[in-house]
Figure 1 (cartoon, rainbow, N blue to C red):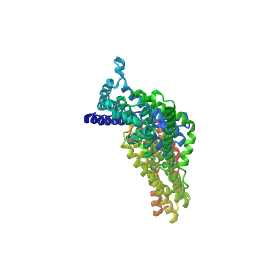
Figure 2 (cartoon, one colour):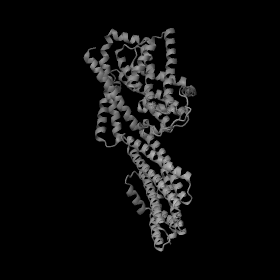
Figure 3 (cartoon, rainbow, N blue to C red):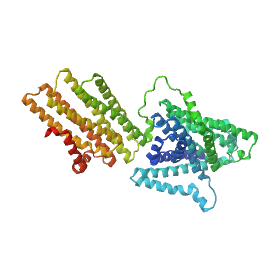
Figure 4 (cartoon, rainbow, N blue to C red):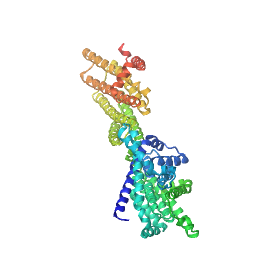
Length: 583
């Protein structure tokens, strides 16, 4: 093996790792939200969790990616630790699919069917299809599929380049001695763990081992301990991902590590005993591509069979090592680990925005109540709520901006835009609640009272605003277009009420039935209430736009006013309900 073979080996390794990386990322994107939502909405059924972890990992070709997702879900309270354990076990089995795909590189023979199955025969065609789809297609989903095909082709070319470059090692005695040394089980486990920890992919390290198997110098006695060590090394990614998370997320990463360490210790001990007592001929025979894939699968399935019934013990062990703190942890609102899974990240953003909406809605209703009867405790809650909605807007807004830099499909992009608009409207509703409270305090402090007729008009306005806030909250929280369509006709009625109340106020001033000072407060109140209804209209418009995939808010509202029989019916209903004093 000369310097050119070494350079070819390095180039092949780089192509292999690059191809695996882009193929995994593209598979994750193209498999998309369905797999992510399936993981994020797991039930408590352990067998279903196992199958889900297996299926998701088999599709995205990375147990590390699945485990990092699980850590993020646990950190965001989207999944319990008990659910996470079964998913992690399934992921360990799912990752063996990669080794079987790579084992195609070991196919040999003159038969035409065997030649067609060999990757060097069909990967050029896959690369051609992939580059055409990537360069010609406009759809992101089709581009991702093209990138998957390109990634697979690059991966297999890299695998062939590695295999060809190390072929000369078959006649090098020192190389044979190196792998004889790895037949020491502990040393083999250490090598497998270290290499996998460095490249952070057990699938990639198994592929590298398969590439070296072409030399014919690697026995099963050396390969099996290395494979066992690879399962420990892949835990590094999840452990790094758990830094800065809550205790349950740390426990999930710890379960992943303990599962692989315990499985390795038990089956390595069994392997060493069998080797020492029975010395089967298989241990000294030459490892093949397919043989390594078989050993990888058997080991991971055996670990799951051994530890699946003990999931409860693993959970209790994790709680022992990471006990609950005496002081409650600060709630983590949004986890950046979910940015890699946009559908789940958007669900989490929506849940928090619903929480923000509830705070703003309650705050607004309490401020309206203070107009009738001032409550100092309610005043404190309203001001605290305004600070909370500010915090929610900053947190969710910053997170959505980061999420938007990721590759989102059309639906995800529309939903992210809707949430960005909605948080601004809910924050402004919280601000208007404080403004209304300040008007209530001014009425109290200055001893101002409205006339009986003015108070009746104000009560009607307050009732209409309460209803539009309730409808908007329900429409947003349930993402219900039918409910959202009820908002715009009521918003138009509130606009009319504002103009009517303003003209009524001018008449009272002219007759001397209202003071200038009371008039200023009156004007501020109806302006704030009308603006609250505007924000409710924006929120409802966003809900409708996302469902109809139309991001032109004003056009949607205009269409609702002009073309809808439902709108006309609701407008008539609200007219009778809130504009009765207009007759």
